[in-house]
Amino acid sequence: MKIGANELKVGNIIQHNNSLWKVGKLSHTQPGKGGAYVQAELKNISNQSKLNERFRSSESIERVRSEQIEHQFLFRSGDEFTFMNSVNYEQTILNKEIIDDNTANILEDGMTVIIEFFDEKPMNVNPPDQIILEIVETEAVIKGQTVSSSYKPALLEKNIRTTVPGHIEVGDKIKLNTKDFTYIEKSK
Image (tube, rainbow, N blue to C red; front, side):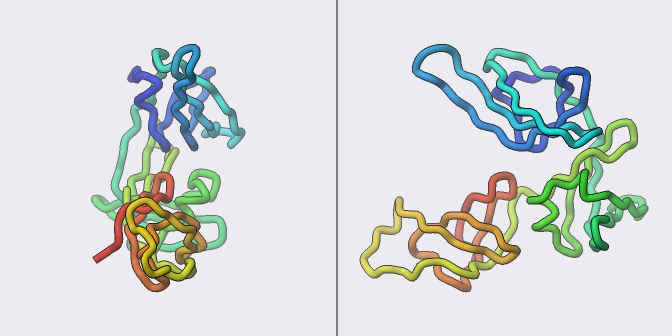
């Protein structure tokens, strides 16, 4: 399926240079002079090599149609991750090469994920869009400090670093975007 370069998302699987690639990082740039472009960090599905590629905004990219099946994460044993199909209860064991480090870091027992299959071969694991994590370490709240636009660094459980608004304290639970680990809101 052809999509525009601006429609690319982290985690997409694309056909490029006669290989399958997973989009790892994206950056949209619109320079003052010249046309806008998308800078993408790609990871080869078969040999795990990386490639930085620049696509013009007007360029069409072949996105691979994959079968997306809901699974439940069961457990990790060394470099192997075991998932269970939510429909037929079959277990799928995936090696660490298929799962990116950020996803592997946030997996919890019982978490529902989407595994993408191409030609019945697992290619990608997509975690939920949001997770709730607890603040382990951050700077103290300064009385009178504005809440609106000042962000401070914070360390979350599972050793994830992000920035949070000034009113967030150690022990608070926050919602986090799993694609780029950005703060969404304080969890109720």
